Length: 468
Image 1: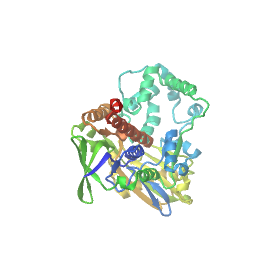
Image 2: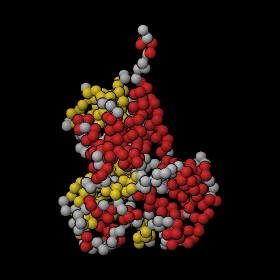
Image 3: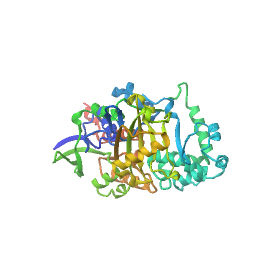
Image 4: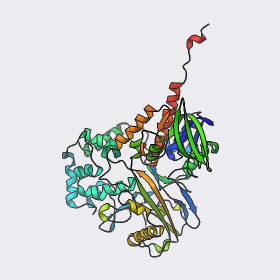
């Protein structure tokens, strides 16, 4: 039986981030991953004649200096592709037409996105009062504070784009905890926002704050997890190892995994699980609450066209579809506009998202059906005049965890499990946040906890032994 200081189950961004920091801290770490690739839902492929296609998340957005330092330590900071001005123009569907999202208050006043009545209602937001100590849905919170049109035309597509979720079922306290508590304390969104601006200005100092960047890599986002795995070492990252069980045996954890049709056992002092919440529920007794955390299925449909066959200029990020429009797609990203370096010059690459909490069954439609659905979107809104030269579909059964009502109570079970099982550490998108940077930071949190726990457990030096 192999013995390691720490075993990390799951080689997504969270697991790799934790394992890398532990490796650099001098821990003997082993990563077990069921798939044959690292990165979890981050997966990239090179397609001849088209370019690099990301089959899961398409972009990362961050202003965190620590993240850029992390890339530098991996030797890939100089490779990043940063979306320019194109990424700032975003659209939503309104009454069957694409409408650009306003970038400023004056642009909002001039925008057809909201009616005059809805714009005037925004002025009454500071008078709406708060509901301290009371959770409510994301939809209800924004409807009450900003009006139904804002909730339907702005919040709904945003939630679909980030969570592939239903805002009427998502918990405000779980999805936007800082905003909810800030408004409860300040009394309104306006006063909370002004207080944040004042605090930011006071703490800015001489250095200018780095703006957030939207980026990828020439070969796709998978360049990042591959670089982390390489830094950890191939011998410490075991692919094709499906973890079957984990149990406590005295002072050790015994982990059983299956690889190449054989069962293999490993032991460790500390076990880090970064798998989806339902998988944790299957592996550990008493984790039924985690097993109940729902996930939205999503299909990503990637179509490439000859540039001459798409009439729209595609000067922007893409568009999202509010539920009120009753479209069969959640939205479409214009990848070749964001990162032209990743796509052949004479090609257009579009990624369409289908399914989510709104229409989960759609994600499991036939490949031809999904390609036709995406093509119809492109034909209607973007003027696609010919069939794509390349089509590729990727389904993710557990794409994004849903922070629905009761989520915080379910996540609290993770705290109870860690307290009840010595040496256990739990993390992932279901606990630390669904964005890719959230998952990376969640892995760092796990590594810090493991290192701190090891320091507490180390035998203390008895100074009396040194006295002559």
